Length: 416
Image (cartoon, rainbow, N blue to C red):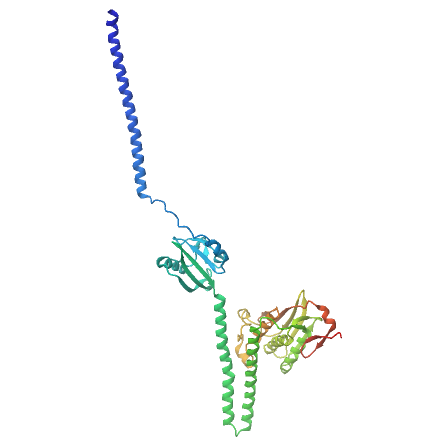
């Protein structure tokens, strides 16, 4: 009994202690759970708030299959742009022509057309003068065609029409210049004919006017012939049945054509030609080309001066140069002197009967023979025009050839 009385209060105290411990653990666990739930709630709240302000990820529009392969074989400049006007594919020529730089279209005009096509879905085709670079004076003519491609892409195709525009301008200027040049001698002949009729009782006046008519008619005939020659040279890309030509004979014939005009002004023509300068081509056309250079040298030289013409072989090329002691050509005019009807000194050219077509004919003769003509000139020191032609490869034919001084041709003798 004593033991039981003694254990009773101890067990009670233990029981109460266990109850207190359990309550503390429960409180701690409950607090921890509350913290976890609170943290989760806060994180969920923040995620929910962030998700409200963020746009859901959008699927990028897919470029139609095979577009890249098609662009790689197109001859036109090609560019594909997405919905944000960014370039997603382009041909190499789009970069080389300056339409695309750093993944974007360079020109505002093209970007505006892209937006219009995307807005209404209609195909557009225009011709634009676009800046070639930072220089505002340099431009390129582009024929542009745009069309929608897929859902949000736009296809841009462009072709460079700069050369075609330039050719059209040259043709238009040529027609205008021909009309003007023909009108001048025709009008002069008409007026002089009326003057002859009015002065029919004055033999001296009639003779003077008749001489002027003869001069104008000669000029008109030369102009018409040069227009015909130039047109024929421009149409024929290559020579028909070229023959072996000795340039020494060509130069000799050209000198004979201008000798009278040179002697009238006491201008000495000095010739220095190497032997064996042979080319394949048209002897008469080559004589015309050299004679035109010599005629210009005589016309633009002062009296009592010298004009030199020489020829040599340089590697696989034959050169014929004509040098004068004239006033020279300004640098700004040297790039244009081979244009049709272009004259450095229009007044002097008309006084000497020049048509403005001589150097253009020289240029086309050289081009048809696979060569070129260049000019060196300095004001006050004269000018040098140089014709460069491919040398004849078969030099053995020279030994069995007979030179014709009239045509400048080497004709082959028959072995029969």
